[in-house]
Image (cartoon, rainbow, N blue to C red):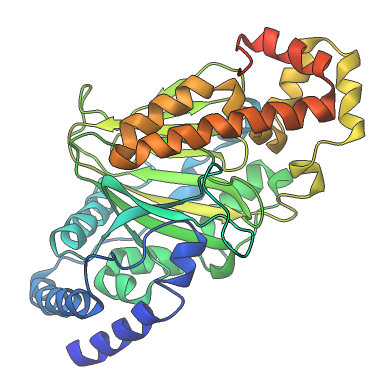
Length: 387
């Protein structure tokens, strides 16, 4: 079994699963400082360890119907009205504990990889091909594993069962969400869903402000994040901050078996610095007609907003992915602060590029909506124009 598993691990490491797909999603592949050979050796060792530990393993009762039982119409109303919602005790304690134990085990056996962010500095020089070269930065203290990788599922039987069930054509999670918010037009099936495990070792590990779907060619419509932290208490950090556009920020505690659901393409969010270890996994669900022209291009019809009260203009952007064109300007200081907190050595150039992007956003949006309308929006929001 170990030999067969190691062979498939080699295929998945060198194939699309752990390199190209990870890069497409802006996440980690095999860490540059760790050779493929060492990684394969670690995985093979983990397989042997898993075989021994599984001999006396208790069989877990897997009840995925909890998605349809626990996600109610009220959650759908909250999602549409506020852009996010939370569902407590999405799994029973036995299953939640087993899922947490697998992430702990994967982290201890060096199977999870450091999170890496691909970043293009708009201030960098153009290459001979007229493009700017992207840089990769490791996010300190954050380790992840994408379950599209075959070897990951072989090492985590509970997550393997969850993956096969949730990403199947009859996904109970997609069915539950479709029943309460059919207008999201969510897609089911493995090609339209991603599940990623995450271990935050503490020591300040966090994520800066971002959208899970920043634009084309991303198709993510919904983010569903499940926390696995039975001992979490106030002061441990790692809370999720969600910020509806020009609305009131909300802070979500990462409690055990709590699911946070929000719009991938219109909910700005970040993870606060975690003092203690923090475990979770995220399910992303694609939607039909995501990032259409109406979602990514400001058009003449949006000029009609100028004839409405400013609060109606803000409400429009709050419910539209077009807000992504304005967010860096609206939350300029918050973006910069979160980058400095999260990225360590890579932060200065990221902040410089962020500030440059803010200027570009102002010029682009002002030229589209006219300076007067942009000034009106700025005054309502309470931000200052970049100099």
